Length: 555
Image (tube, rainbow, N blue to C red):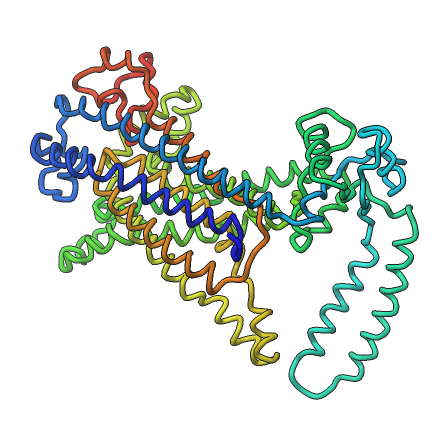
């Protein structure tokens, strides 16, 4: 934590949590439930040897399905217990992280929505000293200035300075332009500093002690209807200053445009993912393409390669592009204030896209329109739908997790950073080229994207753990590799990033806890009414989903 920050430490700890959960689930599921499927399931899987250990080997009407009730709630209990245990350890680390935070960051708050006329240093100091505390409490007030005229000059100056650092002869014309820009920016900065006309409605207020800052944070939280809003600011080097200049009136429209773009992304990716899921099953493709059918007949190994790799690789490639598009929308339309907050937003939206496209898309298949119409008419039918479809999809996820291991290997090579380094080295000195090559792509390799992918892995492992106990073993290997790879990357390869103190871990643990409860919860009384010839208790891979007795039974 001292060297890499608490966020990175907790990503490693999340892998430890995944290893503990899969280890606790693996022994009873793989050692007890899998043999029951194999020996007493009724051989519903036929010649499919991989399915003999899973629920697919259990014939309809078998009494073995009642054993799943115990194992499903065992999954719930173990997962919740270990998540709460991990949160206790996190709180100790969080307390230490807060105690070690140095001033002025520990006593500084970002104050927003300041009323007009009070957005000056003197008025803000009077507001807190006289009206809130009735004693001196503020140490420094820094009102954010409108620097829209200064920013283009600073950007141009940055470009010219990089040009001067390139190898080659001296560039007198550039030196003259730099000197002129430096004089202009210095003069403009002095004018901005000495006037209150360019003050925005945001300010960074540093208090004398942490207690006062905490009191203000609680009184003026965004949930309270006060005239100002106080929040914890990002680290100084992590602030996105242009977002602090956003016009509140125009920002409302931009928020709606951002949501429209997110919806557009969803409906753009949806047909692609649905199409990929439709071609994953080679048998259905062979029925429509006689030439491919004849080729596979001559080369039987193609079928195993197709079913084992094509679907997983294609979806992983498609979903790896999504964070870049999401970040483009976030930067263009929404106020983020800090790169860390941008990563938090990415974690939330990317995780939901992964849940829909990777986990739930199997319930849609190729009949997207028909399925959508049914769900609009009966929304709760989604549980019965998943109960009928997800048990047939275990092979896809048994292939998906091992393919995920390759992404850790690719991340370990840091190939994109290496490529940038060799490219920059042609123009700059080696040390400068190394600085310009960092950091790695924060769209895909940032904390938000990484946290979302690991959360999805744990959710997939839990969802399919009783349907195919073998997936628990693959999940343990996934988290073990993540523990090794990212410990090395954070400590020895990657540069240190701004730290939110474990916020990503909290979001990941909350999502796993919520999905475990939602995907395993049921009304016990529905067991007595369950049709013996239906899937028990609407037993989807969601393990005992909510069963609506008014819905038609899944046969």
